Length: 500
Ligand SMILES: Nc1ncnc2c1ncn2[C@@H]1O[C@H](COP(=O)(O)OP(=O)(O)OP(=O)(O)O)[C@@H](O)[C@H]1O
Ligand SMILES: [Mg+2]
Image 1 (cartoon, rainbow, N blue to C red):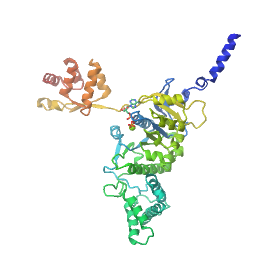
Image 2: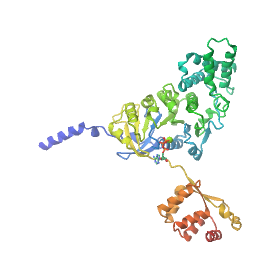
Image 3: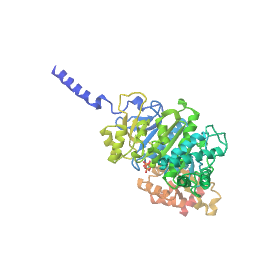
Image 4: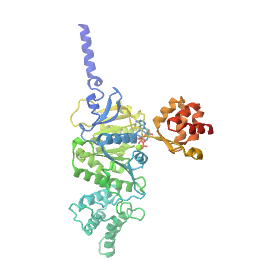
């Protein structure tokens, strides 16, 4: 009897503890999804469950990522984009404020467009959008990047001149534009305002002058990245696989924000026009990394897109070092948030009020190592489990690193050259590492040879390579067999070994 009583008491006490009554991780059937339809992220901290991401049960496919520098945001984004392309054949457009995805994009076979270095984008291009809507968007961008909204007269003058520039080119403001028709540029708009100024009949010439001055910063020779005929077709970019739009070459944050806002609006309209088909997964992922003006201003399209949810058929990924650069509206509407290592109290407070996780999670976040993350998901239906859980480590795709054994130094000795068909041999990093391990090299000498090759753009000449192997006590017979394996014939090998 007393035993029963004891169990009863314990049972009720345990029941009151949230740890037991509410599981600290979502159940496995939420975390584990069909590998053909979901993106693998990593295993959960508590129960080691492999978590794969899908948006099928989430309010939308959009993602926010925060974390201090070096916490692994870009690494996550890169792995995510690659897997999305395998699974859904999803295209990706990276609006790359700091130019940090450039190298990786090239390595992954994507296309890099560098503004400020030979690429131009006419922000008056319509790309199928009605002039009226583009005018609104341009004015909205000016609102976000400048204080024009506090000068209504300048705003009005600018807007009217932009509209007039379209009319002068034969457009009808409220109609879908005809295809292939040339758009005016900001230079035409400035000319219209200047003309008005010259006429001398306008009551507030100072307002006119200021309006011209505002526009001119985007149209000055050398800085006219957005005021010339476009060198790229944004419509095409959304079906071009992986595209990195590098904005790091633009003069300042205003220019970068201007470009990003233009790109977002165009993509939004394009995708909207195509309509949503749930079965296809995601067609396009758009990444905004360190886009603080674009992610923080409530008037920005980034916020509209996230608030309006799923209808755009693309996933917007917003990443930032500083959570406070991401509007609270984004956190409260985005389908998934990944919080990587975050330290400052100010940021943790901001995140905790936006997302509402426990102090336990808060403490974990501030102690995360690289690649650890707290994940918060917003489900379409009410859930009985806590929506924030911890990933022990984001398991990313290591990029394919190719190392080159450069045979040209041997080629230089003429008797050999005739018999060598290839000038170089390529190895994947792990393949080469496996070989070194087979050679019985110590991990120190393996690291040494890799860092030597890394310092020479991942390439090494034959003689230097053999010397390194010898320094690591690899004997000649092993070296000879390695060279034979890569296809050199015995006579050449004998010569190389005796020569080095
Ligand atoms: N999950 C991970 N597993 C293994 N290595 C990782 C992981 N995440 C990040 N790294 C490595 O850590 C380094 C920093 O990562 P990353 O560049 O993604 O940081 P970041 O958060 O984007 O920083 P920043 O804000 O400065 O751009 C990189 O060398 C990356 O390869
Ligand atoms: Mg980064």
